[in-house]
Length: 288
Image (cartoon, rainbow, N blue to C red; front, side, top):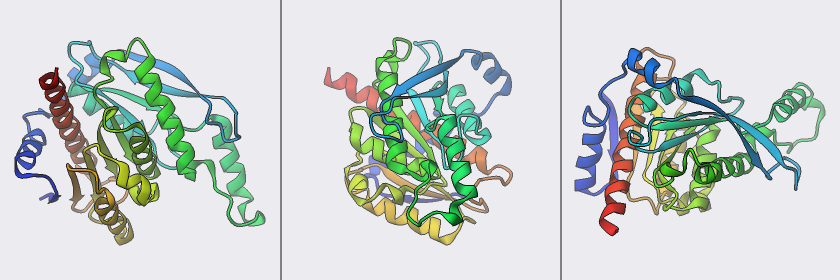
């Protein structure tokens, strides 16, 4: 049984529950996935947020689109420390989202050169002064890269029809980067956020207090108690978020490697994004 802690108003609790069931997520169909997932495009995104000030770098990613009439929105993945667009776990979640009618963009938030620099630094870290931050742990840098990828979605002709429903899926340290980016972009740009085994606390209290997008934090029940506490505390600091929830998946560890646990993450994420993309769509229509 999944443990849920609610903070929403009653009618939003009901709608969220409906969206976390078969109303939105009808199950993963591998044959259908293979048919739909053929529309893959490699993208390159320029960003002025280089590790060195003023440096322009290029990020690579994988964009999976659907027909404009089918897409409910698009989810941008913020990978965890040391991960990339090739992450098997995030690719699985992206497949499930895509199968549910949601486009996805998995992008490397670090360049190959920056990843290599981290590896070299780690190998000699014991010889270096304390206080050095590896690129993969530089949350503000990752957030700037995520903002650059978000701006690319807004500006690219192939994705402009999705700009009213952009979501963030963050894992590990990528969760903090997603929350910082969401606080900077504002509620008009970001419709929903999901964190898997994340460290949302690393976003800092100031950024957390500015986030307004509906936020779902998913943690493994067998993850370190400190990680569960970090998520509990971060949830309390999301003071401007009306629709927020912490879900603890029993028997799951940090990487959700146990049978059925990653599938549950994908199901919950699919429901959350589908739910709040739908709310944003209806809200926009009623205001026209």
